[in-house]
Length: 353
Ligand SMILES: Nc1ncnc2c1ncn2[C@@H]1O[C@H](COP(=O)(O)OP(=O)(O)OP(=O)(O)O)[C@@H](O)[C@H]1O
Image 1 (tube, helix red, strand yellow):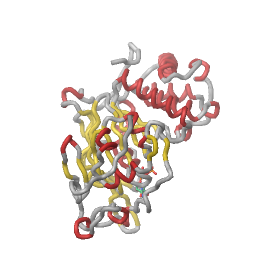
Image 2: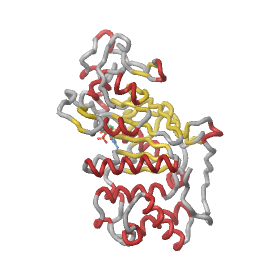
Image 3: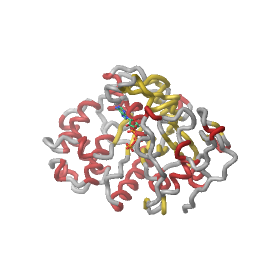
Image 4: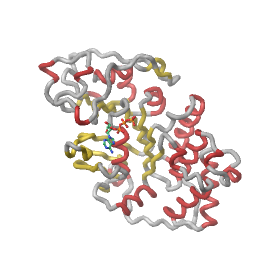
């Protein structure tokens, strides 16, 4: 496993995290996570009973249309929910250590030291008034307790790691001097500054053009191979999932409706929503998305159906079977589906090489 150099580092962790091996393999364990928001109608669940696991060096995809609850799930894991939202049930454990209930200060240490996140709009996370080098160095000083001189040296090393050419020169530049792809590399450098065990990447390539997208995915894959962090990759792009993930969680209206290994998801989906999502992909390898849409939209939380939440949009729904809440049912190959008709249906997948 590659680690960034830095001999005299003074780590400040107030919450030491056990090694994953002590804990039995999985690094991030989210169990029955439920998140509510405060509305005029009272507290409403927007994410219900979500469980997922990410192991060392593994990339797990979290997919679903806009509004399905992917971002809320990731913000809850990171302890970054907005003020009007709260975790009302379940657990988020990192290498066995429970994170739900930590103080803001303790969570901030976890984010600085073991878990990091990159977003779709990297430029928004950078301060236009400071050079990117200052921002990376500041993060290093705060989270790793480095001196000014040490942090400058490591910032350069991080820029080289994420393949920003002329690293020394670029560190002295401001965010507006960077393209979208380069800004995302800066964010990645900042995320890696804390040598995270888990990286949460929320649509990291969506705002980039196809060539830059591919370079970013290749970079992420290389770094993950070298540094062995686990990645939770949030995307609506199944092409990206096909190329990068080993396992996939499919979310709809705040629930996981299917999870499986990536091959099963593509070749043998077990939920009509997954199959419908696959119908929107022409060529997963080229990452090209289509023309075919699933009719309708994801309902807002106050309109979630009481039975199967996908029922109003589902071509296979039967009133008598799908009108009651559906549990996530375990299937073979370690997969699971939340379809009341699972087993009766032959759903279409897609082939990819
Ligand atoms: N702070 C909030 N207050 C009220 N509702 C919210 C809040 N945050 C999210 N929601 C609602 O929760 C649902 C899930 O939103 P979320 O952003 O997690 O979806 P998503 O799958 O990440 O979509 P996208 O791909 O567009 O980011 C949506 O209906 C959204 O409007």
